[in-house]
Image 1 (cartoon, rainbow, N blue to C red):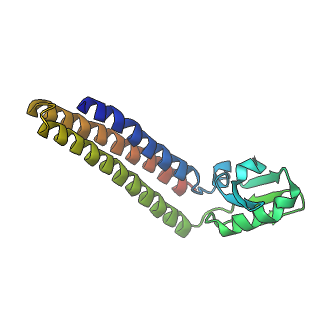
Image 2 (image 1 turned 180 degrees about the vertical axis):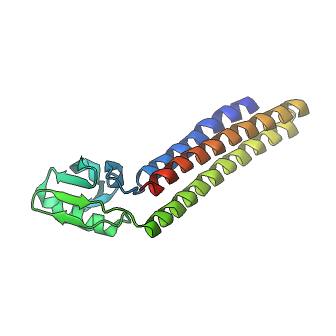
Image 3 (image 1 turned 120 degrees about the vertical axis):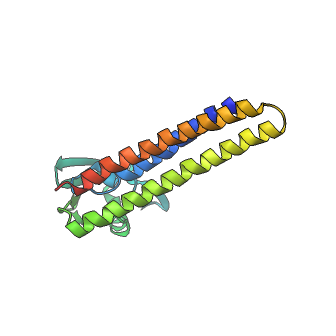
Length: 185
């Protein structure tokens, strides 16, 4: 069963990396990207709804995002949701669309975003390590119950550590890429 615990833990570790990547996509880099606003939730008839379900989002220029709601009555709610979000952009509403101009990032803001990326990387590393710990406990329990021998348990622990190291390295690789994106002027 312990190889099953490895098989169960790997997709969970992969999911932790995917969540981190999604968070990275929502981090401003000085260039316009629809992922900056897609996950913003707008109060729509009393229900928080993702912005990408209420409007078409496009990037006509490298430094602007245009949000065109399918229902014009939601323009005010979209504006409020953007102002309330942590993306740090001020929306311009012109009656039919919401425009977001992406100003170039200051050096101080870039450093702050790098710190946010490092914090998110650490959260992902902690999640992967917690998954490793849970799988290691399963292997130890199986050994105590006599389901697997000591040699097999040792091999499973080593395989688990290799798996963990691989995902931690992936976190580092993705974090470096995002950091370079942010620091690129």
